[in-house]
Length: 195
Image (cartoon, rainbow, N blue to C red; front, side, top):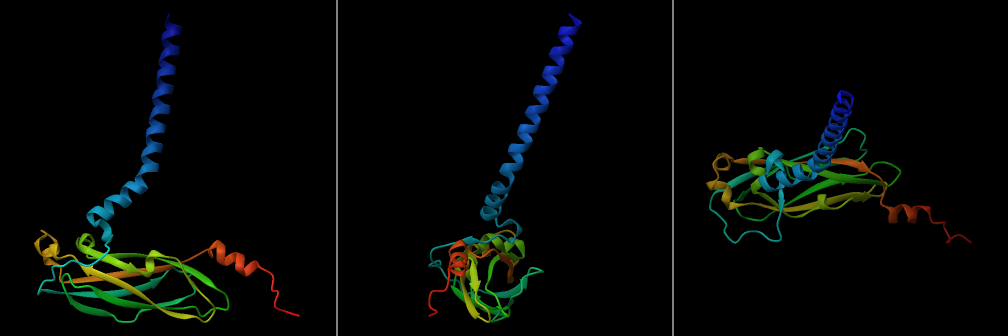
């Protein structure tokens, strides 16, 4: 009888341990999409949101938007904001440009991550169009200006924390990625133009 109870206890312990491992694995798997969703909904961590158009309500109150650019350590591009800051009315649609240059002798693909500070402003900063929505590929020696269209939601002035924000900094960091498959296929195609 004691032997049977001991075996049942071991089985119960194994089932519980497997259950804990399963639950922890499921939580770990779900944590990234949940955190992404949470940041988009709340603006936590400076995450911004996306809109189709700007708001109809434009306030007389202004806000300053600063622009910042950086590169991941091994990214060979040069990258900078064309304009360091702009002042616009809250609710007004703004248009800013960033410049990227590939000084290398090879095509380089990049993708930009972004955030805004202070973090309280993240839930009120909306992008309508942005170069960060797509991968960018620059040819050797190519220089481009990339636009970002945005606005600050008028609801920021009634938010408990947001109403104290007078300056927002929009920051981008470019990092190198693999060339897109379609681009890589073009690079690998044999040259048939020679005689």
